[in-house]
Image 1 (cartoon, one colour):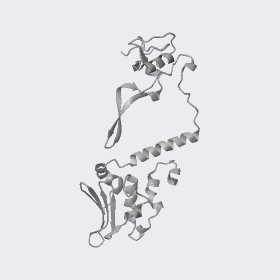
Image 2 (cartoon, rainbow, N blue to C red; image 1 turned 30 degrees about the vertical axis):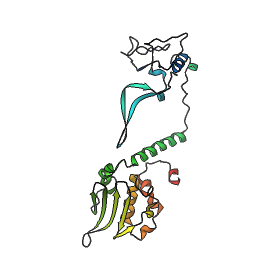
Image 3 (spheres, helix red, strand yellow; image 1 turned 90 degrees about the vertical axis):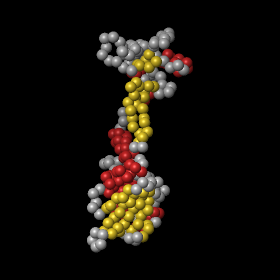
Image 4 (cartoon, rainbow, N blue to C red; image 1 turned 45 degrees about the vertical axis):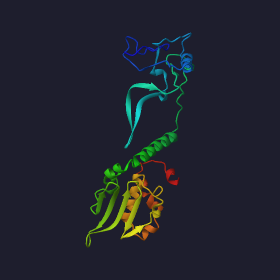
Length: 259
């Protein structure tokens, strides 16, 4: 059973209660320890080695409940067996005591426009995170699902350091009429009717002539699939953002397109 909280009027982890919460020992740093003692509303209080403060008295932003583990597919969060405090955290919430003793900021009323803006920003950030291509192996695994689909005239060929997207013509003698080569450093080459297309023609789509996002790859694929070699010399910016606009969630801020 967790130790009893030492804060005045707090009954966390006391006998007879059905609520048991995490507790934290006083910090070893003497300056921070004195700050804890000063904040806790107990006159002439001197903590001993068993004195603890429960999680109820700390701001939510000061308590770490998950560890973040980086992987090749992104960051995953793992729940901790025991929460811990961020460096420098101190108790600031004291239910049952006069409100002036608590330092937790009061929640201000948020306007409807601010709520919608925050929702849009969240959706946008989630989209941008999911849009990132994590690695070349992930790119090869998901290319068909995310970009190619079930097009019968598209052939994919994966090698260790390059992926080929081959556009096939079956009307006359079967042949490759267009191709996109994506290398393991995410640089690309495009060929149409045996003509190499200058990658600068895709400058409105790519970041420094390389693919880093699925939406960029979808744009390249759409442009090559629909345009001829002559038309690709003057690509349209509207076409370059067509995929991004079509797959962005409803309500996302359009101001992003103007940036």
